[in-house]
Length: 134
Image (cartoon, rainbow, N blue to C red; front, side):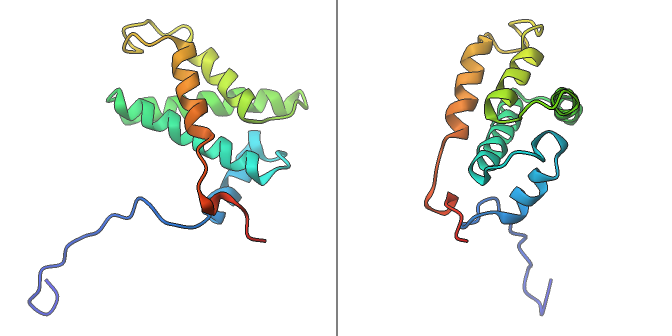
């Protein structure tokens, strides 16, 4: 209560405008640190969000989110050690390697290729504010 009025918490999950800070954080994520294009950073970021949304839709727990993120980071670190370029396709390929050994029932009957296609489509979504303004 503030001044005898109830305080209603508001969760903001959508902000119009480029999320420059998110792109800056992503550029510090080791696998993506040498990705030259800001457009590619957006695609990678959206793909990571797509993976998280997929795990959420499957009602996975927080531990699964952390493990998936760590596995993607480990795969990405290998690309860095081998001086291989990192982009959306590499991320999707790495996630496919993570999904492949998981039983069909754990993937809710979805084929790995179907999941990757869904995440790839999500990563290509564009909005007017995706264009850098500098």
